[in-house]
Image (cartoon, rainbow, N blue to C red; front, side):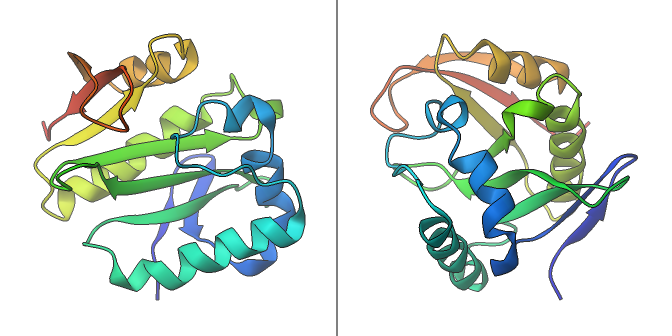
Length: 173
C-alpha cells in the first residue's frame, strides 16, 4: 500500500493511471510547465500524460526511500488539484528536493503550502535530515511557498539542472 497522507483540506496519495485527465490540467498547463525542471518534456494530450503517470508509477518502487511522486486531492470534492514529489537532486543525488505543481485555477488557496508541509513532516519522520526546494529567481510563487513553509534561503547555485536557481532548505525542528 502506498502513501496516504491527509491534511485539513487535502489528501496526498499515490498516482493512478485514471488521473491522466486531471493531471494534464496541471502538467499540461503552460503556466505550470514553464517553471518545471529543464528535462521536463511538454505534455500535450491525455495519452502522453498517461504515459508519464505510468513511468512515475513503475519507477516508484525503485526510488531511494522516501522519494516518490504523489497526487494532491481536495477532500471536499475529490478533485485532483496538483502533484508533489520528493526526489534526489542532481548531480550527486544526495540532497532531497521537494517539488509541487498545482492547477492554475487553484493557485493562491494555500494548497501548495499545506501539502508540502505535510509531505516534509512525513519525510522527516522517515529519517531525512534536510529537504531542499529550488526555484528560478523570477519564480515568485515558488519562492513565496518556500518562505511560507519556513524554509531557509541558502543562496543561489548553478549546481542543479545547469541553471541559476534560488535554494531553500528545511531541517526538522
